[in-house]
Each structure stands twice: as C-alpha cells, then as structure tokens.
Image 1 (cartoon, rainbow, N blue to C red):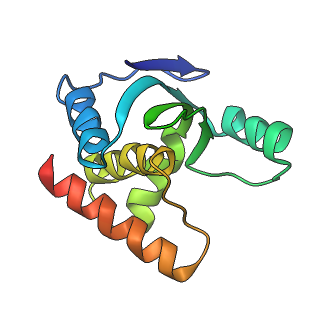
Image 2 (cartoon, rainbow, N blue to C red):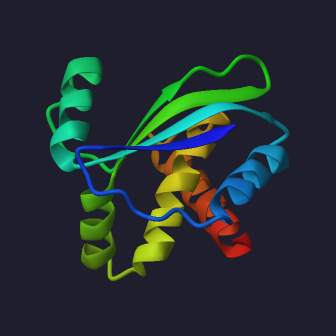
Length: 135
C-alpha cells in the first residue's frame, strides 16, 4: 500500500493516477508492493532528516529509507516539495514531470537501483524517463 503524508508543508492534491503508476513500476521491476510511505515536507524538515540519520548537512529533493524484504518493496520516502519546484525551474523542466521523476526515483531506489557512479546515474535517469513516459 502506498500512503502520502505531509509534514511542515501545505497539503497538495495527489492525482489518483499516481499510486497505480507507482505500483506498475514495482511490478515491471518484478517486485511486489509492500508498505510505502511518501512524506512530503519543506526543506528544513528534509535537512533535519538528512543531518540526523545520514549525517549529511545539505538540502536534497529526496531521501529514501529502505525496508525491502526479498521482492516486497517497503520504505519511507521523504520528498522536499520546494526542492522539486526549484529543480524544475533551474533545469527548465515541467513541474509535474520533475515531481514524477522524484517519485519514481524513490521507488527505483527501493527496487535496488543506485545513483552514486556516472553509470548508475545514467541507468537511473533512463529508468525514470521510461516510467515518466508511461505515465
């Protein structure tokens, strides 16, 4: 089950198409949907999570905590809505597309994809674009 929560930020409407799309990503990656929580927040909230749990002192658009067991995908995905908006403007991208990219990015992390090396980033971007185009 996919859940959406809001911390320190005004609630936004999540399209009814989002959860089935995320579940389709999981199925396409040969995984099963477990308990997935998206926590949308402001920059300060995400920064605090980054500092407290990852010992990183910088802003980010997404932090994923992996609770995957076997093929069942579960986790907490913290998303900074202001970072998504700023990134969309900075990269001259559509806001909805950037929002979808970040949501898919979290799921792909839970499916086992990484983004530390240039090669991993390239694979991640290709996967994100593939799934966004399906949406």
